[in-house]
Image 1 (cartoon, rainbow, N blue to C red):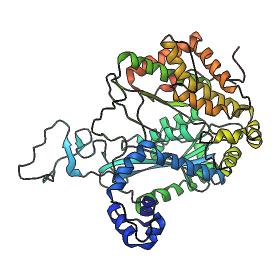
Image 2: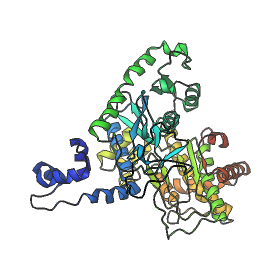
Image 3: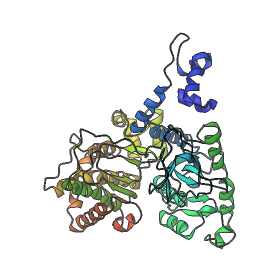
Image 4: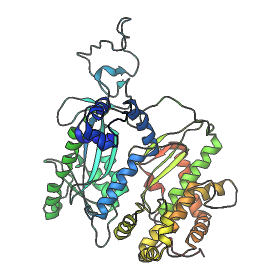
Length: 500
């Protein structure tokens, strides 16, 4: 609440916020302090920020806000806009040093803030790196001066200009287009007979590669055309929908203006979650051996292959390096993954708006939240579930078998009997059991578990898992080209009932 108040009031620092809370009665009331209660120290914000980022609270909060907007019918699921903007890093030009160490060392009396004279010297990302924040890159936009920055990207719906997805990356020349593809895969539902999603964007997105990359995702690119060398089809530029998209696209700039001027994020105070941290040893996880890394590649490959068979989009696979003591990686726009050796990032399950509205009216924000099983056991809950279409039920089953495919593949690789028990060690199996409550049949989990094991034992499926595991072991991370390593989706699969 206090951090929210700081953003709303545009207070420059956490130290100043604590001072405001100390003497301002309105601020005390807002954060729940009485007149005689002591105010916490400003360092509490820094300590809690790291904890909250690890627990992904802010990401869950953002998802909850988007769900509320969808419940209120304020969000379009068909027409979107995308844009990117630079956020200056908490690092100055003086922190830049030559990557090859050729800089002259500071004098003995310079202290911790030495004089740096770089007049006449060309600073470039290839040759220089910041001591303060090594992931920050020199970048400029609109002809302004170059500063150490990150790029934040936003995907907005065109009905009310509400932000429905965000992504933060390094400030590279292709970051905007690459991040857009990630957000579209994660958020925008594919086209069908009644929905034809469109995506509006500025001239910087007018490249043949970007427009072509959107076509397999079922999204029509309404990109502002360059005056010369445009990749936008002439026939598309003449349509009414194209003109409307470009007009509505400007709403996304209002969000960036608010974030920078009111939300105090023009310059980032904390490092982003992917910035290097002092090495720490996770005593609960030993060093990753070669055999464990291979099993992890099989595990993540099993997820990806079976998700693909069910038509679930997979957009990233990653595995830790051999000998790693602890592994951290960014997922879902800043959400930090720890305590695992690998991950498979895929599209989330999208449930009917009417069902989500009913859940929220009952006080349950999401179907895998606490207490949802009791809700779905009630007659009105069963009625909601039984109203799902056959296609929606198939999507739920596809998520279930894909989740259980990783543990099952690892067990098959290890020569063990496949045992997919919710009480076991694999959290994915527990997630699949949670999803089974969204299906009318009470034996849906058992059928999905049997189908998962049966599918992975098919020679062509297991061969695909091993090929993908080999590629992951070599690369460490698979994003570009991942689609070519995955099998095509099977029409109507997985069907209900036990495997034949």
